[in-house]
Image (cartoon, rainbow, N blue to C red):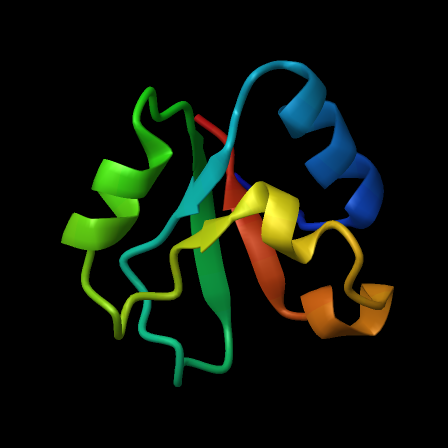
Length: 77
């Protein structure tokens, strides 16, 4: 199941300790899907992931306008 990504959901995920939205999508994909992830060493993780990936740090997107999140979804299992 996919849930539309919102600022409210991002804040909730952050409060629960999640700090990454991991994605197999490319930054160029129109529709993107994310899986919330908890990473212990954020800087080590960021140094290793594929730069073309749509994976993002939750803290970095909390202040984006809501319309930027259109067509972005969380995968819920």
